Amino acid sequence: MFKRSDQDNRPAVQVFVDGAAIAAREGDSVSAALLASGRDVRRATAVSGAPRLPYCMMGVCFDCLVTIDGVGNRQGCLVPVTEGMQIEIQKGKREIGK
Image 1 (tube, rainbow, N blue to C red):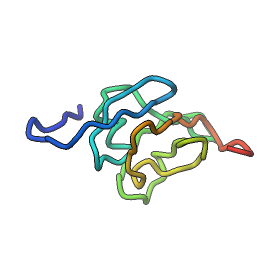
Image 2 (cartoon, rainbow, N blue to C red; image 1 turned 45 degrees about the horizontal axis):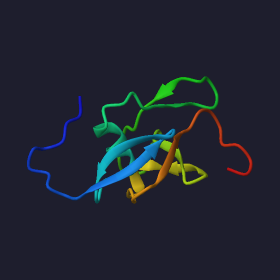
Image 3 (cartoon, helix red, strand yellow; image 1 turned 135 degrees about the vertical axis):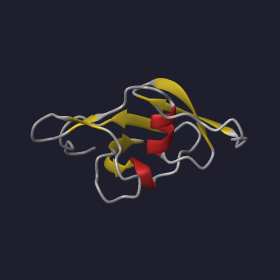
């Protein structure tokens, strides 16, 4: 569904999603990188466990929550990727200490 432009010449950045390496582009938000990776990435809501994907891409809806470098409940649409970033798909509510 999401595809990078053939004219996107930004430098590549490698990030890790649940331990697997994916290629992102410098300047991508975490959510944009996840969507462009083609992976079936989604979080599970805390109440019902319903699957969610990034929706608004501007920090309003909170459907893009992920754990980034050990810190949970980060809005992936607002955080730019960095080389070697560790991203975990968030399942349910945030755990204490994460």
